[in-house]
Image (cartoon, rainbow, N blue to C red; front, side, top):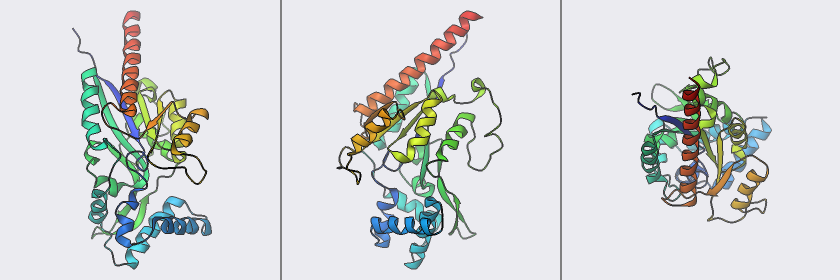
Length: 289
């Protein structure tokens, strides 16, 4: 009698606006510098325009410049300490252990990943960092004294897609590009795309959502139902509904991770669906032998 192999499923999450409200820097980092968020982002965007510069690199450089201007320490541990002050959407902190247990009872091995334009050091300082197999996020290079000196990695909305391929092919780092374009049959990949879920909150997640959906995976758009319309006069829900209308997401739900919430039920149903589809494929394969 053979033992049934667990079905492996990976969930990749954006961070800002998906697991936590707003941008992570706005929780503790900007207040420590006494700089309004709108002022900082406007300045970062101006730097990007004037220098034909990637917006992520612009905000990363400006973060260091503004901190130095105020004599604030910018060591790795300092950034992780800022992460400790990040607050999450309802239910997030208890969600991971609960959903892992649910999946395990179904015979599913669930893995969680972050793919974010935010700072990996901030995320590593949060209470939920321990739940992720890997955190793919923008980050700094540090000198011998562990002081941030230069952006080491900038993840923008278009290159987020490469990290889905890294998960798909089992590449658990950001520097090794040798396997990204190497041909590997789908059945030999650690996590097939059809067994992947991407959860994001908006425009910066569109390429990743569209790609995962095209590859047979599941894209879920989440929205903050506690805030009003954006500058485009769309409510967060309406903006998310556009992801469905434009065929970029499979489902949407409020960013509430508490047990029994709409999003909680949706994620469980998708896990069940993926598990059933894999079981059917295995059954069909056994019958053909």
